[in-house]
Image (cartoon, rainbow, N blue to C red; front, top):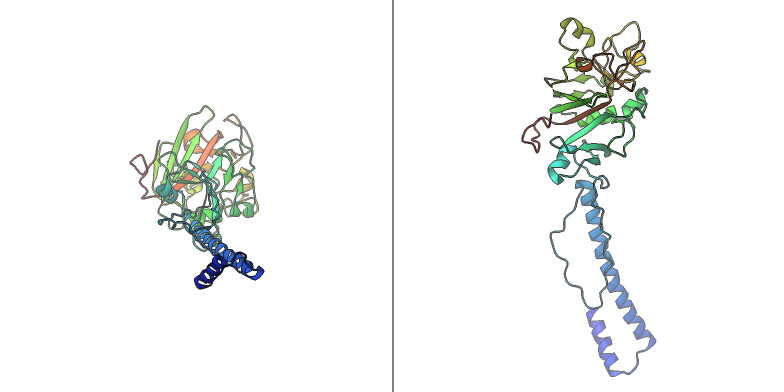
Length: 330
């Protein structure tokens, strides 16, 4: 091709006017150069896309060579840099936090290579790196759902104060290795806050009905998931090793009825509960009813007080947060 162009150039300098065939050859050469430039941009764009899909980011470590004479290049569009809009494929929010230190927001994670990425809310406050699996804020989302809804997840995933359940399949994948710290943030209707933490929090798969397992408790709100401190109550109120129940699938130990139907939410019920964070949302705190079916943490406000805000969030047990501890802010 360079030889042809040289011959054409020599012929053009010797002749005052190019023939139609010669002009056509020159146009073809120009088009081929343009095609090569566009192909290069396509290769670079495909590489960036693959890096973004695999890692959530891309980085060019080389400089582009200077443009040749008359070469035109279409510059690629810049990707958005705002949080929550990029599709990331970190294992969880702690990995995302360690990599980018982004603000709190909604991001896509991928705990297992064989599953599709899914949207979660990442709490990057409180030391950072928390993946939120449940949130109650205003009672706008109905938590009295069936097995399928709790399996797949439900609620709103747009704003930081939205209510949602991440989904038992997603929670199982997220906590599969078991070396996790669960922190449960609570707030009453006077604005007072409290918390409880559990080591090695995890749930089984659907075949085992998403059975709950957890280890050592710490915090100030009391160990409601273990049924409190009364040994006589623990055998019927502890949630450890309980399978998940919903209004259409009863796995509890209450033989006279269904805890999920009475308490209007899906949960790891025993006979029935000392904690019921997916229960009915009552405004104002204290409530009356046939059943103690409110948003309950018995060891803090009792069975007949329905909490205003609850958040269940997890991160790896070995995570060293930005506050210099593994516990986050109290």
